[in-house]
Image (cartoon, rainbow, N blue to C red; front, top):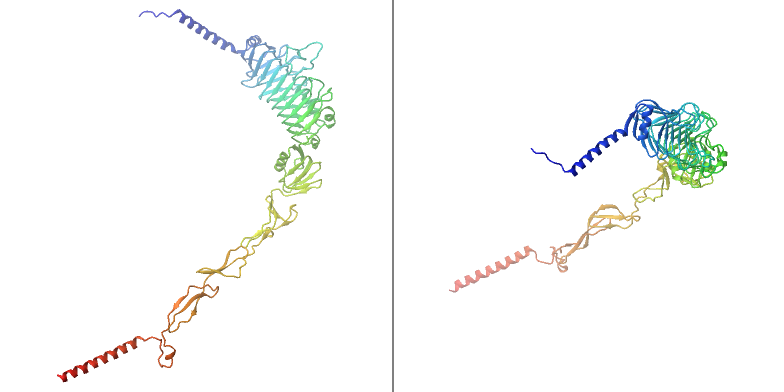
Amino acid sequence: MGKVKMPKKLLSLALCAALAISMGSVTAFAAESTVSTADELTSAVQSGGTVKLGADIEQSVVVPTGVTVTLDLNGKTLTAKDKDAIYVSAGATLEVIDSVGGGKVQAAVKGYAAVFNSGKTTLSGGYYTRSANQWYTICNHGEMTINKGVTVKTTVDTVSSLIENGYSSYAAAKPNERNNYVEGANSASPTLTINGGSFTSAGYNPVKNDEGGVLNIYDGAFSCPTYEGAVVQNWNIANIYGGTFTASGDVACVVSNGSWGDHAKGQLAISGGTFVVDEQATSAKLFSYGQGSGAGGSVAIKGGDYTGEFDSALMDDYYDTSISAGTFTSPDAADYAVQSAVAASLNSTGKTYIGTAAEINETLNEKAAKGDKVTVLCGDADLTGLDQVAVTNTGSGNVTVNDVPVTDTPVTTHGAVTAVAEKAPTCTEDGNIAYWYCADCGKYFGDKELTKEIAQADTVVKAVGHSAGAEWVSDGNQHWHLCTVCGEKVEAAEHTFKWVVEKEATATEKGSKYEACTVCGFKKAAVEIPATGEAGAEDEKSDTAQTGDFGSVGLWVTLLLVSTAGLTGAAVYGKKRKYNK
C-alpha cells in the first residue's frame, strides 16, 4: 500500500496544534505547584498560579505587580523571615486559602505584618498572628476582603492594633508607603471588607480604620480585653452591617469614632450587629472617641443590639449621634433618637427599643406580658394589643394604647379588644347593648376605658316578642293576626266552621245558608236551601199540611178516579147497545 502524503499546509497546522497543547500542559503544571522550601515558594509565587505549601516554611514572600496567586496553606505554617510574611504589591492579586485547615501565617519581625497588602487580597482561610513584637498583624493599603473561616489573633501584647486599614498620614514630609499614602505605590482610598471570621487582639483595637480607609463589616466576632482602646476604631468612613463586638477587661469602649481632617471624616454608620460591654469591663462604654481627635464626624445607628452604657458627655463633644433603630440596655439612647422615631423601654427585659411606631408596637407585643410596664420615652405612637400592660408616656409625643390617651399616669388596657355596637332586639331575636370584649382575657366591659366589667348576660337585650294586631286576616284554611311591629303572621289557626242560615226556604221559594268561622267570621260561599213544598195560605185550615203542589199520591188518586169513571161509562154504554140489538 502506498504512503499517503499530507499537504504541507495541513502538516504545519497539526504541528502548531501539538505545540500549543504541549505548552498548555506545561503552563497548567506550572500553575499548580507544591513547594517545600523557601526558594521554591519564592519562585512559584513570582510565576503566579496556585501554590500549595508542602511543609512549614520560613520566608518573606512578595507577590509582584501584575501577578495573580492563590496560596493554599494546606495546613502548614508560613513564618516571616526578615520582613512581612506576605507582601502584595500594587497591581498584584492574592487569595489565601487553607484546603485542610490548621494553616497559619505568622509575623515575626518588628514593624512588619503577617500580610501587607497594597494590591488586591482575599483571605478565605488561615490563622494570622504575630510573635511578641510591635506592629499590625494585617495592614491594608489596597483592596482587601476577609471571609468566613479566617482567624486573626494575637495572644501576646504587641502594643498595636490587630488590623489597620488606611494610613497614618497623607502629607508626610518623607514619603513612606508602609505608613503613609504614596501615589502609585498604594491606594488613595484603601477598602477593607470583612464578611466573617474571628478577630481577637491582645493589644489595641482588633480593627483600626485609619485615614482614608473605607471599612465595611458584614459579620464576624471581634473582641479586645486590654488597653484603653476600642474593639473597632474609626477615623474615616466605616459601615457595620452585622457581627458581634465585645469589650472586656480594661478596654475603653466597643466603638470609638473621631475626625480631624479631609481624610479622617469620622463617619460611622451601623445597621446591625451585637455590641456588648461585658461585666468584666467595668469602665468601658459602648461609644467613645479616639484619642487626639477633634470635634466633628457622625455616628448614625440604624439597627443592632447594644448592651452597655453611653459615654454621653464625650459623644456630645466630639460627634453628632443619631439613632433611628436599635435595642439598648441604656435608656440614654432615647436622647439620640431621630424625630420620626419612637423610643420605649420595657421593664421585664430591661431594654429600650427604638424604631418606627409600627416597629415598636410589634416589638412590645412580642416581648411584653400581662403585668409588665412600658414607658414611652419619646415619639408619637398608637399602641395596640398589650393586654393588661401598664403604659406611661414620659415624652412630649402623643401616645395612645388601644385608643386610650396616655400621659405620665400609667394606663392599663386590654389588648385584643373588639367594640360591639348597640343592636336593638327584634320580635324574635335578642339584641345587645354597646359593649367591649377582650379576647385575651375573655372579659366584657360596659365602657370604652374597660373599667366597668360586666357579665356576658348583661350585654343581652331580650327579644320583645310579636304584638298581634286586632284585625283577623284569613284565607280558605286559616285565620291569623299580623304583628304590628314586624308584619309577620302570628296566632295562625284553622277555621272553626258553623252553619248560618242566611235565608229561610218557604213552600214556594228556596232559601240559602253558609259556613262561617266562629273565631274570625270568615264565610264560605252560600249554598241553596230547597223550597219546602207546603200549601198556600188559603189551605191553612186543612187538616193536612199542603206544600202548594199536588203530591205524588194525589196525582195517582186522581188518575185512578178518572180511569174508574171511564171504565164504568164504557160498561154502561156497551150494555145499552146489547139491549138495543
